[in-house]
Structures are given as C-alpha cells and as structure tokens.
Length: 241
Image (cartoon, rainbow, N blue to C red; front, side, top):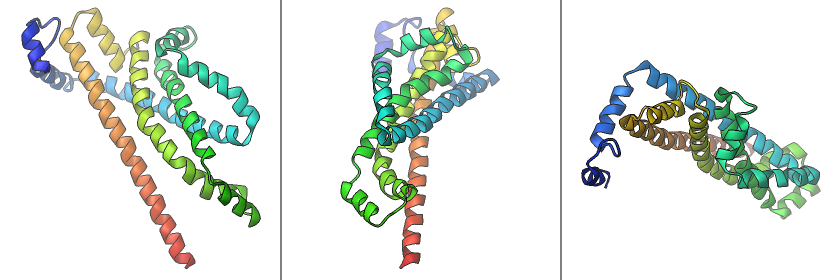
C-alpha cells in the first residue's frame, strides 16, 4: 500500500518510497548522532515510565486503604485523563527544561492508567480470603503479598502493556514540541523545519520499530519475573509439604 501510494503521488517531497526510507535508516544508524539520540530518548522516556509505575502503584495501594487519599486524587486523575497531551507539554515548558520534559510527560500520561488499573485490581480481592486471613491473624504484610498482590498483578501487567506505548508516544511528542537537542523528537523537528521529507519518514520508522521492541521487551521481562515467582512459590510449597 505504501509503495502503491508512492507511485500514485510521484513526488518524493510529499511521500518517500519504502526502499528509500529503509536505506536512509541504515545510513543514519551508521552515525554517532543517531545512537546518541536513541539513547537519550530511551533513557528519559523509560525513566518516566518506571517512575509512573512506582508512584502509581504506591498511591493506588494507599488510596485503597485510606479513603481520604482516594477522594483527593480522584479529581486530579480525572483532569489528567481528559486533558490533551499537547496542552500539558506546552504548559510544562514554562516550568520544566526541555531535557526533563521527556521524563515528566510520560510519567503524567502513564500514572493515571496505573493508578486506575491497580485500584480496580485491589477491589477484586476475594472478601472470603480476607475474612480467613483475619480469623487466622495473618499479618498485613503477608496479606499484601499473598492476597492483594496476586489480585492486582494482572491489572499491573495490563498497565505495563498499554502504558509503555503511551509513554513512548507522549515522550516523543514532548521532545518534538520542546525542540530537545540530541533526541529522536529533536531530529524529527529538524527534519520538518528543513523539509527533509526522507529523514522525517526514516525517524518515524525508527519510532515505530522502537515502540514495538520496547513493548516486547517489557512483556518479556514481566513474563520472566512472573515465571520465576511462580517457580519459587511451587518450591516453597514443596518444602512445606
């Protein structure tokens, strides 16, 4: 479809061919500037993503057990969900340096997703298990580990799967609007300013490929962690027997 559209339009300045884009990506990958931009974007965006996971999970747990915290956070989460990412980027540029924008914006986009999902997961905890834990006087840390965590885990995994894509797209958008140097977003902005259509398509292809790879890497790490945890639980159960 891409090649057909290229042949129909017949103007490289409007639409580059798939072959030309592939060649340009390979040419860019041979330069140090390419890898510096990729490293800067990846490190900052993933930092915002991981920070959102940590803070979102912590506040979700606190909000579940302390209703006042949930009451205070709920309207804030609603505002963040309904506000366009471009508005946050433009407002944040007044207070935050462009180099930190690719950390803050992914955090802001992923945090509500994590918070909402984990809250939902904690509410699905089997009340009979909680009653049993209360009868046998199981400690709160043990309840959190053996009852609440397994209930919230599927929702956290879903947040990671969806959130990593949100973080990546919003982070790149923040770099473009913030004109951040030595980043993928900065390279996209420069290629637009100087009408380098081929470079625009090449960097867009890099964004898409890295997004797919990031999601697969995150899911692979989650799979390895859950499998290791499951194996450890089976071993502990075998020792108890």
